[in-house]
Length: 128
Image: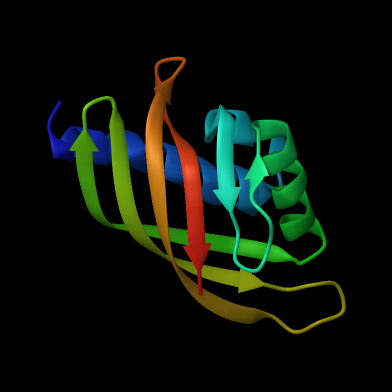
C-alpha cells in the first residue's frame, strides 16, 4: 500500500472521530477509532491506557467540556513496517453548558496500528 492509500484509510477513521464521536456524541464509536490497548497523552494530564478508560476521557470532554466540533487535518504520514505515524492539526469548537462557544487549535501525533482489518489510533498525543 502506498502513502495515498494509507491516508485514505486514516481519513475514514479521522472522519469517524469528527462525525460520530464529537459530532453526535457517540462515545461507543471509539471502538472503531482506538485500538483495544491504545494510550492517550492529553496535555496537562496523566497518560490514559486502554480503550475503555479512553472512552471515559472523551465522554467527559464531549459532554462536560462541551466539545462540539473537531476538524482534523493530516499534515504528514510515514509508514514504518506495520505502523503509521501521522502529524496533524486540529481545530476544535467548545461550548460548555451556559458558556459562549470558543475555538482552539492543536497539533497532534498519532501512531496507528491495524486492528480487526482497520487502521486505528494506538498512541495519541496532542497540545495546543
